[in-house]
Image (cartoon, rainbow, N blue to C red):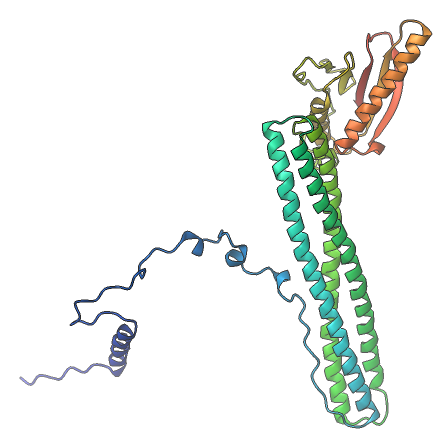
Length: 398
């Protein structure tokens, strides 16, 4: 029997040859070489940070942020040919003006990018300081700890720098708005040049190209303006919120205990469903026998009653807790702060008690503002009562 030759396809031969060639080039051992040893470190495990997205280097983990690149690169206008006509010379002048405009827009874009980077660095430094202060207050510290006071001052300085950047962003926005006006004027000039007599076909072709270049530049300018406006609005709201939080944090440093975020920011939280009428809350009196009582009767009107029967009354933490719960139930709540003095004794004693009660009410009002509650949400009043033995300050919700 005749044996047929085995035919191997040409593609298979080429593929096998490529594999053998690649093995030789990559340093793989040949069959006759039994002394091969892999190079040092060839099979060493790679560090975890080289493959994990949460690497210590953010640029390696997530890539370069958009604002760290040229966020608004300008495409230079296409060079034209000077035809020597009046329209051709006008087109050349518009082209030169467009280059100058694009240079100004690019400079403003670069300034915007730099301000964003500065704001990010300053915000990180600010939040790092606030976190350090909050962590120390959380575990407990002495009232008015000078280390925390210094950190608070540094945090306020960082926030002031962010606020200065807002002013510079406004300046950049003003210059970009001027760029937009120039671009619109140039576009109108191109449209008007179409009607100038004495032009050749090449002149009108260059005008159409210029019109497209100006329109592209206008789109970049409008995008830059929009991002500037959003940044200014966002940073302005951020500054207002953090200043309120800093004020509350300063009160916490003064007393050596952590409260929470500013009541001015908390009041913007949404009202939970099913919330009914506000009722007085029961709060455990602070350590040290501070004279603080709360009405337990559900029909009682005051949210909190602070009795000033000793020189120092520690009421801030309980007051903050009561207001926090009240604003969670009713974010737009308004409050009445009433100074109550005893209606007993001779007229001189009553006058002195009334003056002291007013002083205590003003002290509580300052505490409320330090916690972030606006003064226009609190009404201050006075009255005397025969049912009290010492000066009191009562807080009502309305």
